[in-house]
Length: 539
Image 1: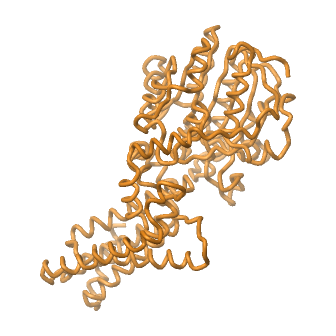
Image 2: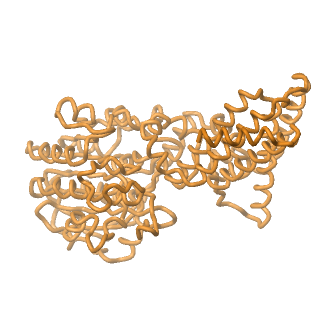
């Protein structure tokens, strides 16, 4: 890359172009890049007239050009070079976020989950599309142009500042007029960052978010979503018998497609296939808006998570009334087990407020339980082996929420010795298939070690968001959301006969959501004789 930069610099010295032409080239190139990044990540779903897509793109293009003119003509060369370099980082972040999550990055997400993003930066790099690497190359060209513009700022500073001020006022005037057409206050209602950003671009939309969505507004919106009820499964399927132990096993990036996928005739997840035969089994949507914590929030609270930022990070969010509280009130010992740090998504603080009796994060599992630590998490095999032994140690009624981590994007946390199919291939899909195969074996060993009668609810926190025709693997999706498996398994038993919806479209299409399933699970638990965690009457 350094050699290429020197070659471009040498060529630039021979450019016969005047500074004005080079400046215009820099502005156009930069504005085109901004527009392309916006087009790749900001999605409008509410056009009401044929001309609106053209209008939005035209206006946004004008705003992009104005932005670039102001910055290029006003900033000193060194500062301009730094801003251009920062622009590449901005593009990489929004492109990788959209590529992984399927929706544009918002200001509230960026500010509230910056720490999580930094801790899994390798995941962001792995999810970068090819466009980001093209932008890295064009950055070199832009920096060479900036270096070539020795006469760039010969005009007096006062003249440059006045020109930039006039352009800035024009920019603000356009934003002001547009706000009558599509007001930023729509962000407080049904409109998304993608919808507003499709007209204004990122900077004005993010600024509006930070102004309009303070913690009080975010809390109010989160409370309203948390009250949403959805129980499409209802009483279609019978209640299952709950004994002394109930386990929610939340599996990182578990695709429904992974359960059916085979490589040269070998199933990728043989253990989940085995468990499914005697389980109540479903294929559902578990959408990830603010992170994997969305899934455990729904599992614990029985409501929809916030779309603005993780509920666990919203100041003042009430966690007192939860499924965990009901269990504790019924005399159940409650535990949460996760093999990463408790600060990740602020789970430790939130789980303490929720009221779990026992918390085991990476810190406790490494220090107290002496489990080995690799990279950013304890391996799932080690954590699940310990969790199975812990569940078997006590005879009192227990509930445990267990969250895995090894199959987190970029799917390279699985030790090489455990890679069965694509050893040495670090492409996303091969890495994912080997990773989820390893996790599958850990799940099989965990379930087999549980005391008889234990109910294990196994589900993906969200899909893997990867696919490749080259490797013959694609996500199954419903309304654009990757689907995940949801199994209700009883150690030593067979619950399959209790599922009257088995094989029906409702159970297998993705029409059901994680909220539907958790509403069902919570309802079965409440309907059990004596209230909680005792055998339910025969259906």
